[in-house]
Image (cartoon, rainbow, N blue to C red; front, top):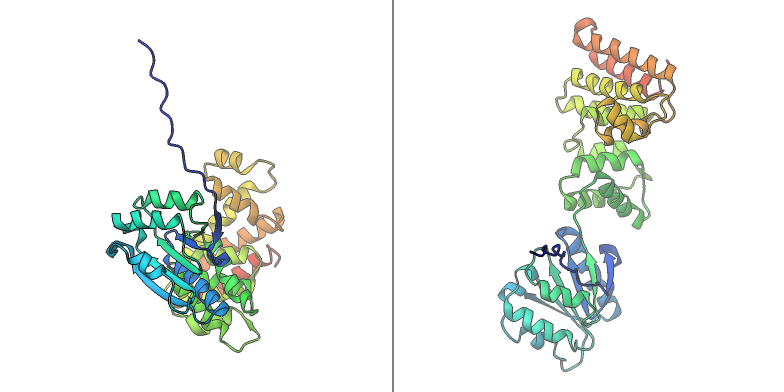
Length: 342
């Protein structure tokens, strides 16, 4: 009996149109705004509308809901008006579209109306795949604006930095990190916080400015404090410490976070292993090894030893040996931020 041929993976349709980021949106007969990040999608569509309005203030803007589509709606809105004003047709819920919408929009792609910009918002899923494939293959002369969710803090940091740089406002890295920490769960809230700070009349937005507006929202973890101190950012670490204590953090876990990170750094200090080898040797996740290697930059063995001694002393102080746990924590941060130099 002949062996069965191996199953073939489904062939993905070739993408023949421009794939742009949300802030690169530009006019095109068909603009497919895809992805799960609704805030970025809404902003991209607003930017496109403003661009078209600036080009011609007589722009007519119409809205359609693809899941409530009635036959003939698209053709009716795209038909030339008496004075031939340009038209922008915003279509929402394409991921829930009706069969009639798919059929008529596929037909529309064969001959898009002049001076008409059809914006299709698809938030994900398989519904409407035939239509998406046709657009991505080049039918209708469109573009795709991908609005993917920003999951990593680094991506949110870059987003916040761009909010300030676009309007030429100076902001410190520490202020950006604090903002992202406070508003990482909601991109719309992060953007709103940035805009409020941009309106501040200070020459530069720093950690103190952020604290003045959002002290109640800054959620500081023990490891955030440790990361700032280990990187040499003493002032920022002290601000984060005060936020952590003000929000009810206990000094003991804060010291434990410092001890955990310094111990990991000490294990990798002076070695020549890759992060993968180090992770295997010391039984840690690769990302932990990579982070420890990055943290070691600027440190030496003597400084590590001195900092570890300071952490051990602080541990005793906050567990009852000392009278002022906060002073002990601040002293520890100063020593760690100076990379062990007392």
